[in-house]
Image (tube, rainbow, N blue to C red; front, side, top):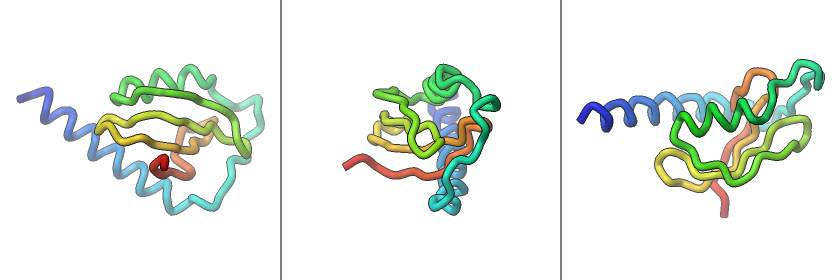
Length: 93
């Protein structure tokens, strides 16, 4: 039961992060490349949150991640490369 409660708490926190990022969906990442964190660090963070990463690429100055979230939903999410804040998110078709 502890694992289920913890997974639910993590999922709720991540959903709140996605909702906050959706408000910024029209913004592009404008971070100097010297300030970027490595994409491997983003992958490690997301995998720690239960994601399965299919691909991470750079698009419009953001990290664009294709993968499956902790709930098994296929996602396409843009992350700020400095803070890893969600810039834009959505489900893959």
